[in-house]
Image (cartoon, rainbow, N blue to C red; front, side, top):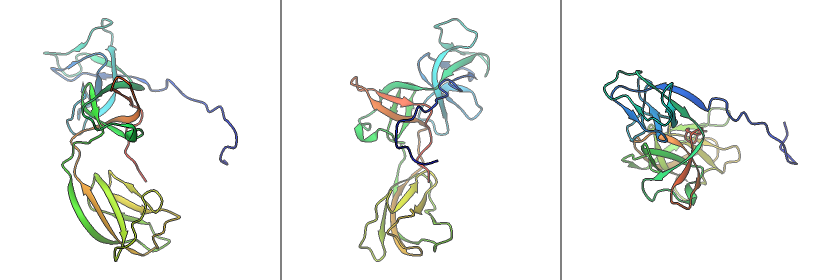
Amino acid sequence: MAALTSARNTPEMADFGRIQVYPVEANTVVYLGSMVALNGAGNAVPASSTPGLKIVGRAERVHNGIPGQNAVNTGGVAGGISIVCRRGVFMYAVNDSSIAQAQIGSPAFAVDDNSVSASDGSASSVVAATAFTFPVAGTPQLIVLNHEYVSKVVVTSDPAGTTYVEGTDYVVDYQSGLVMRTAASAIAAGAQVLISFDWGAPSRSIAGQIVNLDPSGEVWIDFWHQSTLAI
């Protein structure tokens, strides 16, 4: 289908999948309105900076419980009660000064069940410029950086001289540590380049995408969008 040349009434499946029910972990309290995550066992816990959690939305109510009651499973077994969660765009506090206008559209990382940060909390290590050779035309144009969770990727010509532009000459999958030439890249197929980057495993889970800033100082987070930039 061709690109639009006029307005289009694009259909939306607004409520599909927005409401889900999850078992609450043993000895756990989930407060209504909080960010909820699933742990490795698939049980609901308060969102936190614990690595490996999957943020699933806002706590709405206890399943088959009293309206307005928090999900209190203190002393209970896993799954003793369940929590109803809703995905959507919700407002939460900013844990630090990391989120500003420039971060809109970027991932937000959960700090606790009521606040987020633009920082993944990783302890990054800088990898100095290392020589890589792009594959020749007609073969996969990926360079594997041998590190996951990379950031601050800089690609220059080798010998150094030209600094290439991300998004124009190359794109990066930051989570997997992959770099790929674009179709219109100024980097020649088979060319050797120098790539420097930071890397470090994140200590926080992605809560969602930063949608907008609020005058209160809090930020709107879209729980539907939880993936990092991918090629």
